Length: 427
Image (cartoon, rainbow, N blue to C red; front, side):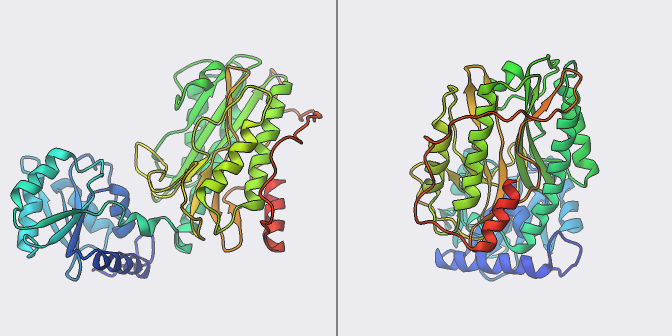
């Protein structure tokens, strides 16, 4: 390993990650692992490139020096960014998998127990078949998830990087809200969000902002397509800011015209769900507990809306096409995974199908702490209501009955300090 002080994290942090990974390698009785997932490679080495559609692999022996297989062009990223010393690049006219096989032989691993990420998007079946038919003396075993076991709980160094990402998220969201008005296009809103994120120090996110207006908000994962926002419509915004490949995300909603009773009720239900998350969620709860709590609150409404997805997902390192780590852990019914300090989630108690033709959202990215949880953000959660001229106006508070909404579980308490943090965030 090359000790250097210009990586995203300290050299000691990368040593810790590698040491803990090797303990898991030994626990599985493996001699080496082949990592092809770009998020996992970045987590372990600080390596990143947009050229990950070309085969790349980080090979980590149990004891010997790790080495990387990359396209020749991408080798420059190894030298510029990482602690990795050994590389075996292949030319565009070469065979990437043959280079991997040759390197495994070169470093004495051709007849060993080798783990590989069988479920990796970037190690397709035909390439895996080549390894199996070529390395006949090796024992190849699936080790998918072995790196993610370390990624799921973020270190304090990672939390600080995510807070840098949160600054970009908030800047983008504020800019998007500010520019929303009738007559503007969704593309113009998206451009304003992106510019503000980048000016705030953000970097290219795994997904550009989601911007939909009026009836287009009902289309799953749709975003700006040139539509002009009309008077008396709403605009749904979801922004994921990025810094050093780490992400935070939030949803907000802008009302251009009068705030209807249905939309006001939806706002208050989503705010209650987020307030309950901050009041109740803490280490020791199961993922299913949290999902049930959020789902019960959102589904008890009189506006025809549903929570048709998971209620949240792990978030952290990401490359396109998605900013979430939901494949590691998602908040959904039946998942018995237990919350631990350092886990980070994008909580999405959003409402789909309000009055049959509207989708709105208010979301939060949280960190699980020792005695509760806290937000990465400080922005107000209320819908932004604007006049026809695009000027923000105060909301008219309306009396609605939320007494039927199921309360949080009995007997779950937090420390006074955490309660104060929650009240401040909720305000």
